[in-house]
View 1 (cartoon, rainbow, N blue to C red):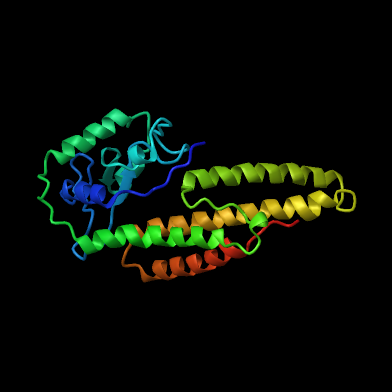
View 2: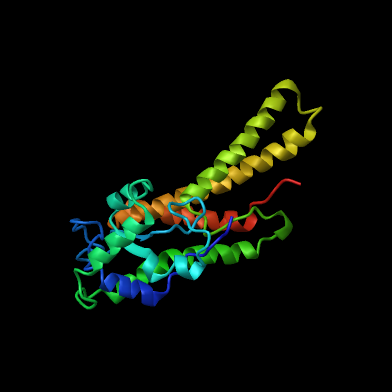
Length: 244
């Protein structure tokens, strides 16, 4: 499957926000993108998904096209989830929703907060780039557990399902045999599958908490939890490895 980054040009984000009117693009929805304290309380959405497992994924698109202005719009959480229904919300329909919304606002009608926009881009992107750099310096590169910082929740869930399926197969074998006759299964295969599942679950938890923080930016408990999870995963990125 074709992997793509999520690096969205700042100029496209700025233009997208300026033409948004600081409102969700869904018809008749007035949910703001930034609140009065300049906190980001909406979601930046791709019409044609970044991931092959995402909604309306187009394998012929380049990363530039996928992360370009024409493929992006701001939606509130509710309407982002609703538009995941691809049978109702085709590419054409979402592009019409985007176009109709933007015609209601002149380019300079919303004086977007530059600092807030910068933080929106920097806060999440910088952490995952840091993880990528840490992982590149893994203490035993040949045994490093793969970490794709561009993996989304759907892709990670599918990865867990696949690994759990393998784990189930191993477990079935162990029901009929014992570790003395199947040392490799018990001492190598099983631990390594569990490690891969654990790493994927850690990523899911962090990404999920990130979404919650965006929706509840004043929740200090969530922010504390996110910081703890991120710090722990930095160690995972550098030290977690396969049994060999």
